[in-house]
Every structure is written in structure tokens, then in C-alpha cells.
Image (tube, rainbow, N blue to C red):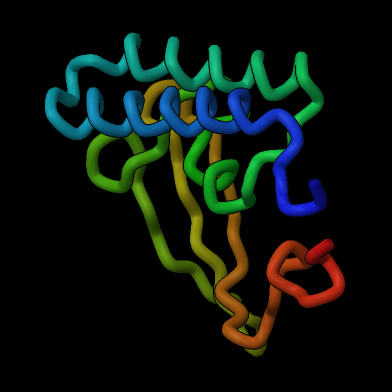
Length: 119
């Protein structure tokens, strides 16, 4: 029993909605509203069932308008660096203009990827 994941069907549903939004947006960039609907449904399900999403998924979603951030299609991506500091990536949503900053530190390890995070 320890090998089974709790709410496996819910995670499969979230994965399906994310893949559907990505597929719709990559095939036809004008379908932003449909992809946004899929992403907002995914966020609603995750909140209602109190499920933690992977950081790689959360980084590709806009917090303000729930649209999928694909560089060159629905978002612009820029590399920034201040003098003497570690650089960061700035992703700007083309729908609402919200910006998201992500560090470019190669030595940084997410808590999810650490051995003590695994059950």
C-alpha cells in the first residue's frame, strides 16, 4: 500500500488538463481562451482537493490570468543580470502583462528534488 499515490485519478486529470492546454496553444496560438480555461480548471481542482503541483508546472502558469506561459507564443522571456549578482529569467505574460522572475543559480536544488523530500 505504501507504493500507491493518494488521489492518483486527480493527478491524472490535472496532467491531462495541462497537456490539453499545451497542445491547444501550440497548435493554434489564437486559442488562448480555451487554454486559459483548461489551466483555470486545473488550478481549481488542485485547490479544491488540496494537491501540490510540481514546481515545473507552476512556473509555466500565470498567477494572475491562469494562462499557459509558452515562450514566444503567450509569453516573452528575457535573461537579466545585476552587477555582482546571480542572473534571473523574467517571463512576461502577453495576456495580462504580469511578470515572473526565476533565479538562474545552477547550484540551487529545489526542495522537491532533495532526497529528504522523498517519502
